[in-house]
Amino acid sequence: MEVALITVGDELLSGDTVDTNATWLADRLTDRGVAVGRILSLPDDRETIADHVADYSALFDRVIVTGGIGGTPDDVTMEAVADAFDRELAASALTREAVDQRLAELKQRLPDRDLAVDREAEAAIPAGSRPLINEAGLAPGCVVDDVYVLPGIPGELKAMFDSVADEFAGDRRSEFIYTVEPEANIVWALEEAMDRFEVTVGCYPDREADHNRLKLTATDDTELADATDWLLSNINASETPVSREWVDDA
Image (cartoon, rainbow, N blue to C red; front, side, top):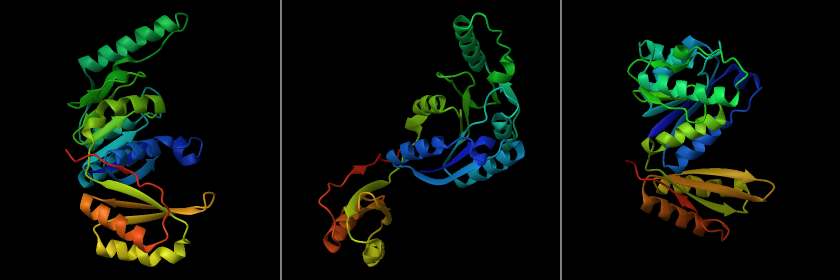
């Protein structure tokens, strides 16, 4: 499975907010054996978002869009996703009930505040989409075909992704080895490993730790193990145990 991530918000492009959501999602997806093929940050522009959602939906198995859902003027993601699939926005009975319940909870906590929330607008998602209830916030997310729309607030994003995490699985496995050899000295070995075996190899120097971390990735256990053994025997690798994380593709 290959997934694209789209994070939405002018604040990401201006540098006002660090895009931790993309890193968190990429890490979780990689742990599940999924290949992340794109990470793209977009402004709060309805047409731009719609165009990229439509393009990525055709190119990737899944698309995750985060940010820009809610009731403020710059929250245009739901409208844009609806545009990408030529659908209208509409509240469902489930999203209305969830928004009403959350508003009631907020009213209990803030009895002196007048909560001027447009209930219908807050509960609206693309017609015919699958609602994703926001257990940690107000605005619901949704799934439209292969596109998952999640909140941008990190706590809300994490809670909602956890509710659909089992829908993301792949067959990529990764192993790590460490070497004190300078990067320039092992280029030949990395290239030969990729020629000999069905693997990709990334080299990530760590100046503070004074070693290089090598990440081998494959979809076949035997190829991965053989490539790892070959590299360990052909470069000055450390004795650090290799780690492996994967989930079989569903």
